[in-house]
Image (tube, rainbow, N blue to C red; front, side):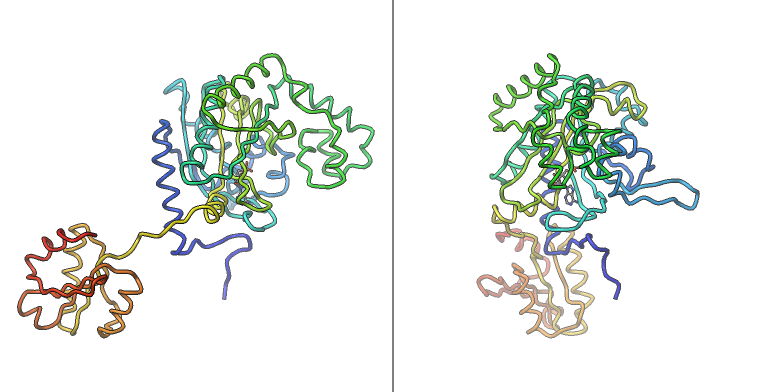
Length: 418
Ligand code: AMP
């Protein structure tokens, strides 16, 4: 037997209805904020992620599913969505159509991480990006969308952690200071961190090595390097969030593991989750459009994990699957079978969900099945009913059975409480 690849999962029928609920809630919710959906291909040129996400990030340096195709192109299954969305924004000249572009997406992503609860190698995210505004209202809108979506869908135990990592100027000063701080400890760093020290010392802050985490405890914090404008921007983001009554805490260590961020960074975690408690992450990336070859365009966005959201919902909300087949049609003899199919079709055309038997079973197992599936009605057709143009309609809740003329059936169903 061939099994699925490690770290990938089937979403089985007893779960797909929960996914659809999230999906339809998201479409409705994003419509309220005036965002439009964008869909990008499952794979892109590898270079897009190397340039967009950053060569020294964990994602690009060790987690991508990349290959060279038959034509010699280096391709990669999407490990994140911001770079593809920015690529599409530039390629399709979306920025010329309107000064502000609000986009959202929902998609499958691929990262070769170590699988554990809440962390898989194929997972799904939804997210939003707004292009064209450098103002704090845009940051606050993105944060509010993610926070309010989680609230709206029934999550309560949310923590919003916020930071500002400043503009390019601040980041450059900070990189130098971090290097100065780490220089005396260079020999104690892992090879990866030594490489990062040279190219991109900020990424050393993503380390999972205990000894390095300890070393970094006394490192300078990025907040000390914010420029005046950075500080004003950050203060305004905070004040809008306060006005919107969105609670947050400041996490001065949060830089997030992607190279493109500038100024605002944030994360929403849930105490309903275990070790992998991040529901969503995002922030501002004012340089990325330019880095990927577009006109300088400020932007801010977030991405949220759907599997994580479903895990968190499991422990806080009681839901039920209301997708039941309403009507079961049972043919009692062979000659009524095609008649049953025609009746089923007619009822479906009138808006009912209808199921017929495909195994030519007898009445007893079919009634048992209808009960098990919580069918609301069962319609029985035998030779007599065929002759008399009637149908026996059984209410599965009350057990009551009524003979109805075929031409009155639709009216009869319309009068019932489905
Ligand atoms: P990131 O793109 O790394 O900022 O992640 C954004 C969100 O995606 C996280 O907060 C998680 O909810 C989710 N996520 C990231 N990586 C994984 C993964 N390997 N498996 C499941 N969910 C993930």
